[in-house]
Image 1 (cartoon, one colour):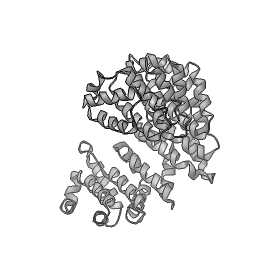
Image 2 (cartoon, one colour):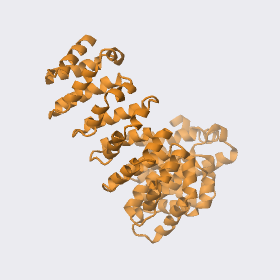
Image 3 (cartoon, rainbow, N blue to C red):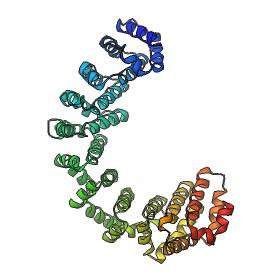
Image 4 (spheres, rainbow, N blue to C red):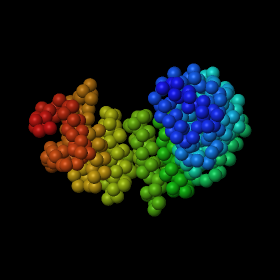
Length: 438
């Protein structure tokens, strides 16, 4: 098979390969291990295949892209950048998005190689065009560009190239394309910032994080809803949370939630802001977050008690996140009867709401009830038992009826609740029918 591949490559090198032979070559290279191809490839073979990409024939371009993906994978990244730099550069300007994705993915491979990454960093025009690809119409091209640039920023030299050179101006210029592209650049900045405190410092010094935060706390409600997702991603890292706290961003988000009561458009951004605090609580400390930002817990309860399915869903998800560890469970227990009453509403929703909300309720209930064996103190067991009985006047019958319905998702959701129940030794003593029936 390797011989057949070489013969077909030779024909391609002479540009004699008709479309039928390119199809045959595509199948042949898939059948041969990359190691077996490596020794047989020459610059002429690869150059010819790249040249065939210039033909205005979609099927031919598609075949060549598939072949090149396989062949380039067999080559050392240092070889690719040293010998195919011009071809890669041209590929970034190709009108077919599959060629751009092929090229950008190769750059991603190259920058992961410590010996080859310098070659990329010394190719500012190549990097400039990858930045421009963020502004492309096709999201697949933009995503690949973001991925490659994120990899470039994994090193000190990469950070210097992106943020302490003219490339920063290119990054800011492409942001001006439109709102969608601007958010793509923010996505890249947050991804880079999440790697380390050093990476975050470079991004902060560029001024782009300040721009993101400015949009988050600005007056455009739809923009707030988009930006909060990115800020939430940044808050997943300790250095990200520290930065947001130092910049007063968390306090600003809390103040916006306070003002949401009088904002008729708060429904656009409030779910994202609540999710932000929910994620913050679980990666930090539920007790500290809820005590420092009491408006968060109050708003969660208000949303759960409302009649808006969207708000109820977000509130239920957040309660499930908070109650997934012991500290969060204890925070909820401190609200006493209000949480007990809320559990009754959640049990009602689990039985009567539309399917999606029912599933979210079941997931939250299983998170609230579950206690790892090493944390099953008598007090905690009594607490979760009381929560279970607050869900319904007949909680066992409630979940039994759900688990027997002919809907796999609901069936599995109810069984997760029983799995959480059965993890507790106190429950298996008090509710032996659970293990018998399920």
